[in-house]
Length: 472
Image (cartoon, rainbow, N blue to C red; front, side, top):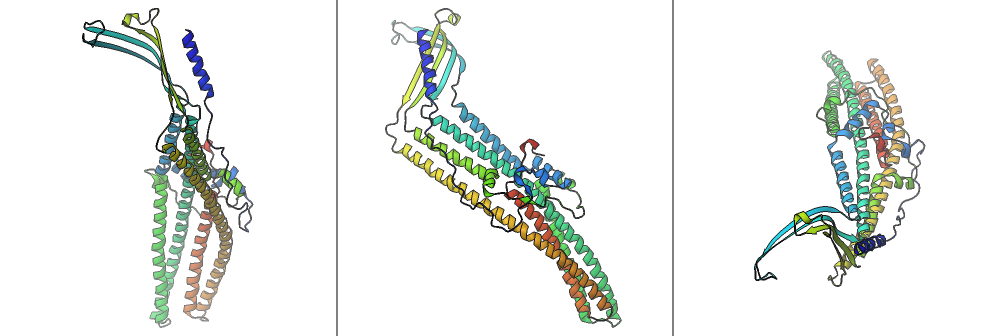
């Protein structure tokens, strides 16, 4: 009994020594970007840090489509399965830090020939055992197992951040595909109206030409505008169908095409004002930056495991139970048995393997630092680009709206002057052409501005409330 108590005490003492880590103390690298955004835009508006995607999308139909995509998109589903794999891998690695315990029973029956038997006669031996066993367990005196566990945890957290990034990206992609679809539909409707108007004008020109009141040049110019509208109609129809197909793919359901509503009248579909905050807030919020930092921490922990490989490793195995030559005697008095096998391994010569592994871990950490800094720089540039886009597109949309008003008024005057015989038909056709081009440009600019707002939302790290669930 004293021996077993001593063994248990030694095991507890050895376990209390474990957990010393040789990993370097982690320090976050300094951000290689400026503290403020290089833009003159007004940075007022909703803070992304407290803004969920459901609040960012103010159109109910668009929110519904995003919810469908979050529940059914195949690419997102694959990413979420990757998270489950990383979580399972971390749990497996974490289990190595706790001693295992197993129950087992075994029996052995062996015949020895006479020339091998100690009695000089043929002998049949029997043994039976029942008890608990301690599988091989490493005393983590130098933190090797702890470092490996920390690395697995950080890798899992990086994968989880990648999942959040994938969700935000999917929200943005659905929004952009829908906005592209809406813009194409608006251009298509404008082209239909313009084509109908130009066909009516062409009929009148054809009649005037038959009466000798219009020239062949007037006829060809009118015909050219009709064909231009027809070509533009097919182009817009193609773009609308492609945007629709992209939206169907993102939704990921068999009946996705039926769930996409008809385009409603022009209205705002996303929040129009977002405050970018500072670059330090971006680092704390954007999922790909957080994922890169978790990978950096994992590589930092790998160095601890590589350093620990230079020191002795102590593993323990053992068992406690009953043993007997007869099965009926397993639980009789005096049948108790135990076995305790400590094993110490000290690396003496490995042809430089451990040193090479340490060098590899250090290089991988430096690579992770570069990747982390690169992710910050990329994020900073994307935010700056998105801010510049939203800022300039807002002013461009205002200017183009004024231009549409001006060209519409010009078209009315040109038509009145042509019908009054003051100007030629050519000037009237130029006014028609300019008005149509300006209206198309306004729709395209308005669509681009809405898409730029979605880009800004995504570049700033979006707003993902995990409690809302995948489908919101």
